[in-house]
Image (cartoon, rainbow, N blue to C red; front, side):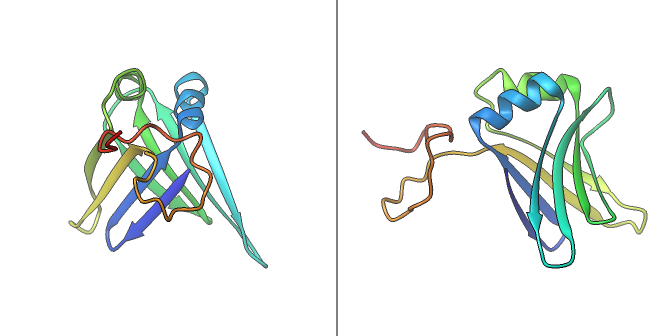
Length: 122
């Protein structure tokens, strides 16, 4: 799982196995350990409503309605997003995506569990 945070937007990308686990279990998390604390970021299924996110006690959680999760995980749909209205009148943009293999040959990370990039020219 990867997260990207910029301003009032949060983007989460899941690998193939993480999408499968999320669809089956309704929950996936990742941890980043620091010297004095751990950042936990997760995606969690919920029964209804719209996508939402919360950050409490060092835990960032993205909530996805079960029907939307089912549609996203079982089709070629790449991403799902939502502009979440905050109490202060501003919005938090939330984006959940399937993680694609990079088409840049210089990338050295293991991408074997990523989705095939539709832009890849064979």
